[in-house]
Image: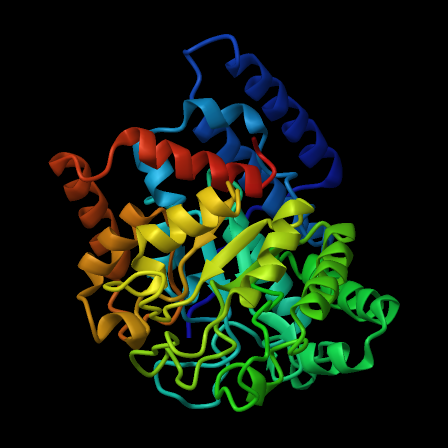
Length: 415
């Protein structure tokens, strides 16, 4: 059991005085190259986190880091923003690998879980109580030179990380909301959920699921109540209400799983999943609608295989699906996040390094390693080694990295 990192005590007056001086320095950094904006921002983050510790208040979204640091980010920082990591522990001091990843490698995104999936036992991994999650999120932000995206799978119902047994409010599943068919009720329930996330310091919900319930016996979608409906128009309307309620609380959302997982008879967590014979164009309707309405903050890929879309590669790794279908045909220029790159729907086919390469070449902006089963502390190193090797070989360019970086910054509200 590790103690939480100690922070120096600050009075409210001292905090305000130091924050004002720090903000002034950051403003000046816009007209002089003598100052390092990233370091100045880190100082502000530490001051802010220390004050929060004394005042007992949750962090305010985007309050830690001025946007003036964005143009000055190094290539190393930009690459770090393209990785999302899961980790162990209720406190940042419980897992030194996440401290190193965020503080030294500039990893820009983390994901919280309520269960230790490495052992498949019902032992909480990051979530113990509302107060503990709030402190964990504030301390994580205090490590970062740019604001972290702190994400969670809070869909409602079965897929619900902030459970009642930890002291959080009850939630309603997508299926229950869709069956009720009351958009005002959906906004009410989703707004309450988003308020819980915002108060905890969680900035990105890995929801809503916009998979259409094509297969009512889908083991990973319909049977665990993750689909709003078998009608894609109902899915689109319910998802839009869900997203609007989150946006009112300052929380971003993620549509998943593109291009549609609702017809699958298998589970990509467990292995290769082919939807060639079951997938239909109607599964794209929710994406087309929400992208057109400007409601897609981020989109998560599915590891499903569809020979009609790409005869060789699963969707996450497919330029035809990610660049051709999603970006060019549907006109989406926001953040694309891979589903966990270590799920067997991918690793049964490719080594992790090759999967990372193919995903980035396909057009994915952010690689998720949410369930790092070994927690060896090497996955971030493997990611950076892979990306730098691809840059050296000319497989990726700095312009390609910059493209993803700016999409991620827009998602975070910094560009």
